[in-house]
Length: 471
Image 1 (cartoon, one colour):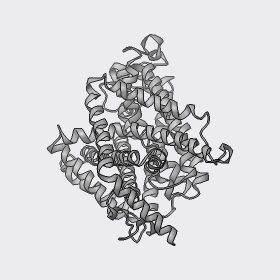
Image 2 (spheres, rainbow, N blue to C red):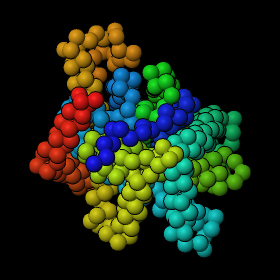
Image 3 (cartoon, helix red, strand yellow):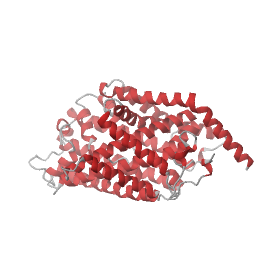
Image 4 (cartoon, rainbow, N blue to C red):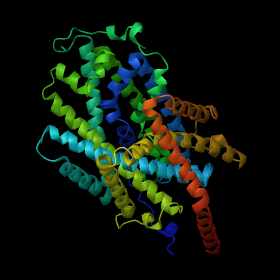
């Protein structure tokens, strides 16, 4: 039997600019362009601001925990590997497969969404044709080289960042009357009056937190990419510092601008408040421009999902937690078998959105929604366990090249916040089924590993250890 550990490793071809834009662009997507208005409508301006600030705090805690782990052990598949090593193999197996299913299924949904957006320009072309075109495009980008994926994501992300910056400038100018907003009076900050900040009460903030977490998902890609980045000990901390600041500024600024210009009741009726704002501000071809930007965001998310799913599958194959065929690399150092399986799974999720929308598709999307929160909890717990083991083994905190501040409060607070979010989902009838499906899948993975896979994985590790001792 072929020993996967002796197989050539992935290339470290991602530069610092790729890593930075990958993690930044992964968070700027449909969660901002489409979901921000819905969150304001549900929770009010104050509720949305509080939600995104709390979400930003959780994001900070997750990122610094991931940073300490990724700098100490920069490997592909990162948080799945860390969970296996520092929490337990069953945790790594469950976390890995849960994130894979969620990420690959999300990629399939993005293909459909991109095809629907193309109807804006080509109303008579069937959606499935555009789905096929985008699937072929993203598959090619991921199959060529890691550098090809990173370069494409760099430009996808660049377009989104420029769009958000332009939106902020136009929005601020509109709020204070420097730009006319069609026939609307200059709003100034009247819509941000204290009496209208929490129209539905403070508890609704916790119910809408899943939308916030969904918006911030993608930041964890910086850890998955650690095994293919140059100088991870320098580039990962820099990327984390830069990304955190910009993400929170972009989101909070966008929420303030939307809340100041549009009443929260109106935002619930707008498909994309970004499009509406640019239209009433007199931006030529506003609908076309924003449709292109949202299309770019969707393709970026699909691109990142394919990358993350493929690398996780490759990493799990090396640990005996996925079929060995997924651990092989092509001549271009790309896990092509894992990529082909991920594309196939994405196509399956796309198909179930039409054929089994009430059963399989709901299950897949539920796993996708919960997997991010569970993954963040896994990252925080892995860092907590790692630091404890590191100190017990005689290590010193000052020896760590990047370390979590205020340990152990940061990982423990992160675990507490994420748990609280999941608890509140149980009280929301619209999200309860997603919680039950997601937790059910997690438990099924743990049980499958315990009763079907544990002995096989352990024997594989013992065999590898004996081979290493012989050599």
